[in-house]
Length: 371
Image 1 (cartoon, helix red, strand yellow):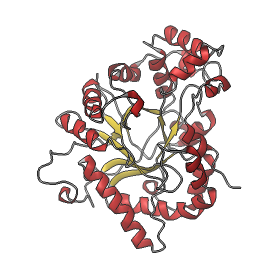
Image 2: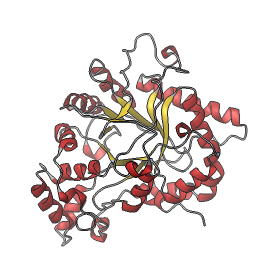
Image 3: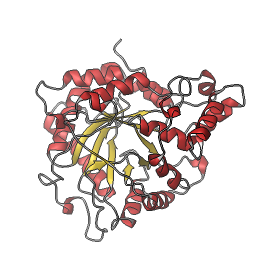
């Protein structure tokens, strides 16, 4: 199945942005693009051809937890199968140990449709050095090394992965992440970090820039520090957030879209087992979703949830080894009034959260705010 991707257009007025999320564009890497000789060796395969438009769904490429018993090379199969099924975009990160396997999967499909690549730098894009030039050089070295692992010279979209120090471990103790990711640190580092992101884009290492895990106080502070008159290309064009049926982020998503910021939703299906478990304890969320999915003609609650996000203008980032076809099919689901339901179907559930149905790190960054 072929995905019809959305062209990235910075000139859509805010009223339209509430329905269609867009990322700014310029001519495709025609200027300031580093030579592939700087990021690939002679024996590497040709890099994938890059698309200039964001697809309505992205394949997540974070490695699987050890408990799920997938070998690291499973990501090669996941990427290969997903692209064959109709995915045309992947979401990567400097943090992910799966990056070389993602690159191998992309190489398997290099002769097919162009691929949209989003990736993320660990934390804020700064090495916390007083000298601005040395700080930028350290950050640039990191992204060049990461691009080499992906076997590309540039990516479509580069995000700052979280509003905290790059040394934080998002696979480790959440308490340690919370202790390090203070407002004092964020406030002192965000302006220089964003200046580095702007420079990375201007040098052709990425096509557009954005953020991840920036909730309203952090987003507002970032915007306040951007110089007046900055171009659309030098402003965040996307924010990747945790969004799922019990964490819909109604107001904040609408605010971002009104500001012409694309919302990418990570882990949209990760906690479906927790929602179902809560249903066995008396919570009504899973039952309502299952009934609505059947009435709307979706193949499953999971597909229904993806369709709901896509129809909100959110780009879901979903990882799968076996359900790529069903995930892609969510982009073509016929419209139904259930997809436009608000609190009747989608919304917070204390029972789901008690069953572990929330992203712990997203919860930390959601509470990052001035004292």
